[in-house]
Length: 276
Ligand SMILES: O=c1ccn([C@@H]2O[C@H](COP(=O)(O)O)[C@@H](O)[C@H]2O)c(=O)[nH]1
Image (cartoon, rainbow, N blue to C red; front, side, top):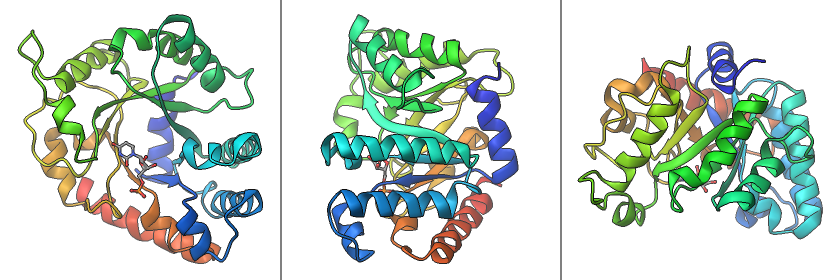
């Protein structure tokens, strides 16, 4: 069985280093002339999949915007994941889950087990109950060829108050997360299956990402103000493992499929130039 790291490496080589988020904000539904209800959600998600799933390496549905509509929204999320994967995109489900023991194991079953209708290629998780509490997700990912992206240095301005705090070991909380994930990924070829989330907006923070040996998801580009030029300052020598992620910047170009594709081509050209 191929690992997620292998699959992601191949997808990026074939389609380019880009993740596009599927975030059906109420404001985007309105901008597309859609109703803020289950029919609007379904149309929006289906259009993005039709436009991009056969050409973008990774699609990242934001679970919250589907859950907003209850069980019918979750059903749309299920079909969005399935259709995206069938069209060849890897699906990173942005759910930012984090819990302990058997509860974390149940989340892992929900999102990483092929037996679940919500099974994605990878998920985002939160390490603030301790990185060790995420072990069931790491185990499930390893068993099924999936991936897990752990929040490390997030793109929001509130993040540093927690993530830069120094622990009793003398390291920051974020560096502790980075180092624990680096240990698991050590030696994996061409890339480990555990990734980190590091915002494109954070600037030079002095954190050492050089040993991660896994994908570095970079949200915060476009609508949050981050630019491809910011990536060098944030990632330095680790640029080769960066997976830039845009949501609103691309989605605002819809609803025309050609416009969504053109916006995607434009941001991909920008990040390619920055990543070198
Ligand atoms: O640090 C983080 C982690 C996750 N996100 C998510 O990415 C998208 C960003 O959307 P844009 O429209 O490109 O701003 C959204 O789903 C966030 O929840 C993040 O922004 N920062």
